[in-house]
Length: 330
Image 1 (spheres, rainbow, N blue to C red):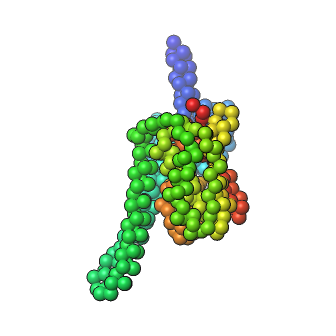
Image 2: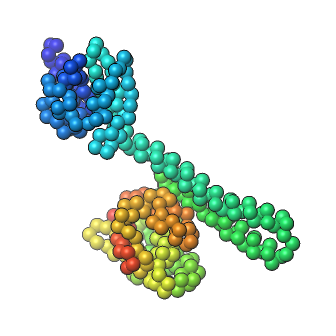
Image 3: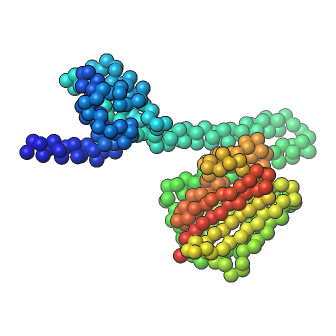
């Protein structure tokens, strides 16, 4: 009966997605569960000295430490972060460790997010303070109008950031439902092109709508318009003078593929996996010159995923970029 209970307990410990190691007073391994064996890449470690089979300085320092009751410490195994707890039980040391990498990544992302929002808001607020202080001592109407124009631009910048933050917060919390219906895509694209024509004209960029007139998609029209507007606006802003933006759509197998292509500056290969992160900028100085909140592509990603789809990107430096939204046919 006791043997059966022991086997059951060992089976349970092997089922855990956390590491467990028992070390005797001579630093020999008495027990190691399956998760720890797989993670540390060891086989049949029982009875062997810890230093012979486990090549991890963090773990070795833990079992070598003088511990009266318990010790908690963050350690690194194969570039991942683990929270390790060491217990001293009757001279034996029991090491328990669990992967906290996702939690640490979340903490860092939260810290970066607060820092980025603070920075993005501080810049226009500083400008507005300077404008107000200048206007208090200014009598010339022409100068006053110039400063008011600058203040209006900065207020619009803050308003855009706050609106994007609210959109992103709702998408991430999934509190706002997606209301899908059949939508003729060409008309949506034409409306967006009209709205962005003043930006395109400034750079002499031609925006070509190549979507067939009868091509329909099953989407939330309002949110999908936000997605397309972000992609087309980026394609214009980061294009070359006199460049081209093209919007196409096709059905392939069981998916609808909507592509926004440009002839712009392109995106470095190392930046491609990061461009959908909040506030990530490939070239910070250029991004600030062309404007934007740094949240557009993150919003695009979340809207695509809310439609059970995804967004992909292809790009070459100096030749342009192509963003492809892939949606399942419904």
